[in-house]
Amino acid sequence: GAPAYSFTNATDTGMFNNSGIISFSVDGAEYLKIQNLDGAANYATQILNSAPSNKTLHIYNSSALYTGNLTYLESARAASNAFNFISIVANSNGIAQLTGDGYWQIADGSATTPAYSFLSDNNTGMYRIGADQLGFSTGGTLRLSLTTSSLTNTLPYIGPTGSAAAPAYTFTG
Image 1: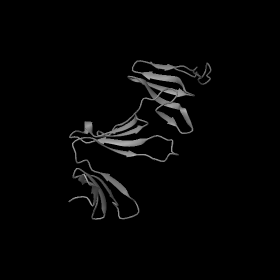
Image 2 (image 1 turned 180 degrees about the vertical axis):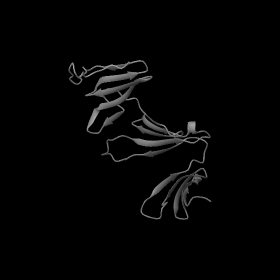
Image 3 (image 1 turned 135 degrees about the vertical axis):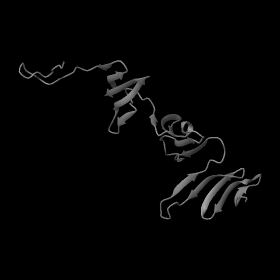
Image 4 (image 1 turned 90 degrees about the horizontal axis):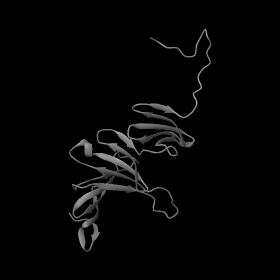
């Protein structure tokens, strides 16, 4: 049926009550449902994608006092897991993606802002330098890089002290 709350020039676009579920429709198709799924005080939002194109849920604070990132979840539904994904975007930059195949993928990062870092030390961590290259940084500077052919360390290696009777390093073979 027609939405209870609609527009004069678009009577099939609006909001309606569907057995205790608040629903929103556009051009006669239900796109958004807000419902209490577990009967308690825990509320859930269910997004329906009834069209063959991508739909996006934007989550943000519209307060003029809010100066943080615009964050939204973006998903695409298709016949193959290769096209099913959830993306996390901040300030129009893709920062992470969960693929339909179950892979967690993140932005590359850099030595000064590694992709994997710490809340209390955000310039120390691990990041992607380039194709098949992994970097580790401390203090915002690359200290260790790993590629398919080499391991490069920019810091002096300090090993244990040994003696003639008990060498710190030994060789086998």
